Length: 251
Image (cartoon, rainbow, N blue to C red; front, side, top):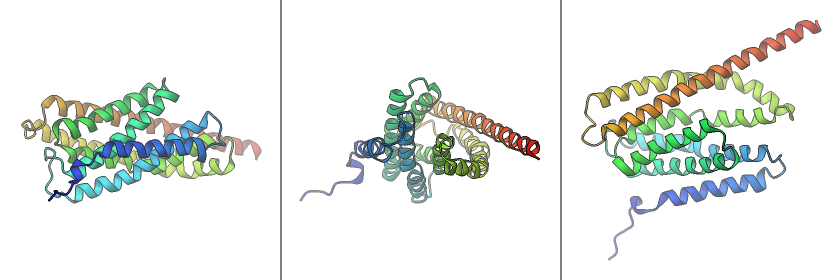
């Protein structure tokens, strides 16, 4: 009698990559076919990001809740590995997008390569530590929906009054949420993670060079995020000041 196929034996990565590839092509050639050639690739990238962000948060949260005894060095469960593969597939697809349409965007290409390094080593090299990686994934993607809507409305606001209104209304709460998650919750969690690794409790299952690399990538990403959101707050302040000055001149 043949034994049933376990979930870990199913090649999830090719399936997930094919899904994101299909979504991207559908967006590029059907959904956004009337958009300008400049905006169409960016909109397609946003759509696959939407298909990844919120589902990744839900899947990662479920994977974490289903294994309540986890630590930063716990072995990955099959479910956790599946979530990692889901995110690997997305970042691979979006990396190809940037290499083709935005090859000079070194920041995003570097971000995607570094993120893939963390996910791939956690999933395929050490097979441990998914707890910390998935919590960071949740923190990174919990703002994804708002960021993608913000990005699309920003790209269209010079051509659409509705997009301009969405951008103006969404910006302050999105910036506030992003600031709390990336500027406070993320650093606090990384502080806990670094403390655990420095204690040496993970040395038997996660080589030091691996977790040091993870910490370097995560800290760098947090610093870049803080700089990015700071610049957005500055832009928002300047725009609001310009509006006030224009209103004064009209009066």
